[in-house]
Amino acid sequence: MSIQTLLSTALAKRHDFLQHAEDNQTDCFRVFHGTAEGVSGLNIDRYGDTWLVQSFHQTLTDQELVDIGTILLQQADLPIIYNDRSLGNSRVLNALSPQLAEIAGSERVMQENGIKFCTKLRHEGQDPLLFLDMRIGREYVRANSQDKTVLNLFSYTCGIGTAAAMGGATRVMNVDFSSFALATGKANAALNQVSKVCEFVQSDAFPALRQLAGLSVGGRRNQKLPSYPKLPQTQFDLVFLDPPRYAKSAFGIVDLINDYQGLFKPALMTTKAAGTIVCCNNVAKVDRQAWFDSLVRCVEKQGRTVTAYAWLNPHEDFPSFDDNHPLKIVALTLS
Image (cartoon, rainbow, N blue to C red; front, side, top):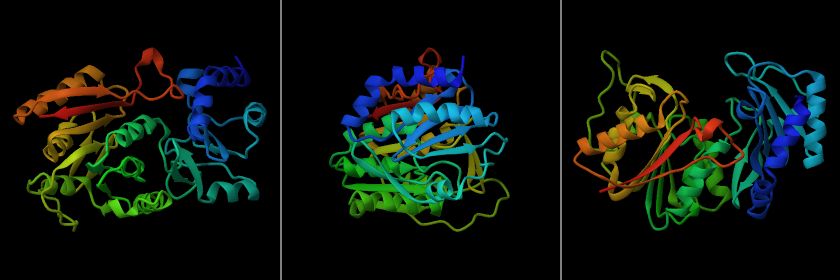
């Protein structure tokens, strides 16, 4: 089946979703999720006033790009940026015309449920500054942050933190190691006039979490610890934990397959009684129920109880096989 046909089918399936997005001031979403819709490694998104086509497995031909453009321009007459990321490191390989290069490299503003976010389709990192499949997480946090304190771990560009502030949070602490990501987070807060309630802590997550949890910072054996911001022991009403699949530093190892508890334990210690911790795991091979059961066991080992929980499933612009999406998000309310 041709890419044109597959894309047209995907757009038709999203008819109601796209109307809902327009009605709710949302102009950033996925229109083709190749893994589940027929072309593995091909993703097509709208980021505000621009279409973004990305291929991760093989380079698109000129004719394929023309075919995709024909369908997209019927949907909305916007510039089309193509990022060929088909090599193993996912870096962008292809050049653009001067006009499109200027568009791709400029900071632009888009909206999700009326919240403004910065985006840039090509920059020193790899992603356009907001993960669209995390929309459900931002919606949940916004709906559950009124008069609450919020801790946003591995915050990236602080989309969760901005949503919390827009939802009426009294304090939002965003923690990320990247100064570049936090700079965008500060810009997002400013765009939405919520800078006063947002804090931005540039730190490895391990020392930040352990200090907030009242634990010693420690580190990996024989590793000299770099400097890190000093933080007082603190608990929050809502904690959001969205770590990368794997990362290593002098302070510890993030490993979502083998040791989610290494982060989850101190994170739940920073969560107040009757508070909520939202946990994310984006590794497809991790079984949803087994992961959930391990979280509950960890809570119980700390002498606490999961009093309620809610699964947060990505919206229909991110379809999955058998409704088993690789991104798993669960909100746990703790006693």
